[in-house]
Image 1: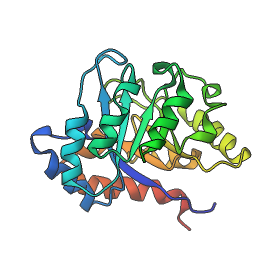
Image 2: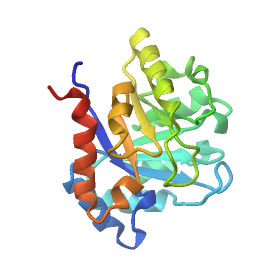
Image 3: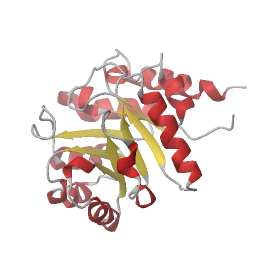
Length: 226
């Protein structure tokens, strides 16, 4: 098996918000490649988290790419705010926008990498027309809205089918996976085709987040060990 690039993207959803800058610096020391920001509005998903001001604060605390996952209604109203705050990646759900191509094009026009997020019960067919226009697809391996959920096993087949579709179409689209991933199953997720691994409680739920990132990265790269 050829080695693929695998990035660990700790999700601040599970971090201590009272010491957020310190938490981010810790995972940065551990080798994190991306900081994942879960944005929830209490409407599209049953929880409320954070907005663009927190992304702006994070931008001052780290030079790592900031990945804003917009689990919100009417994301078109807010993508410019998140781009201005310093987000490098923005993903939206197809169920939340009436004109997905327009939204993705607008995100790219702001100098930000656009992505589409797919819920567990959302078919990959929702990506048929938009796949050539995005830089990444975020496969949700839990139902979005809360951290600490268990990985849905059928997600592995979904990731494999998505990877096959990307390769068959000759596209340069990365697969990001979020939900219930830890050192025990990250190898399977990477084997299936994931390249960006989002982890919240598996990182910030540990006493030493930096060490947790290192363990997760080692486990993620294990499938490529000789």
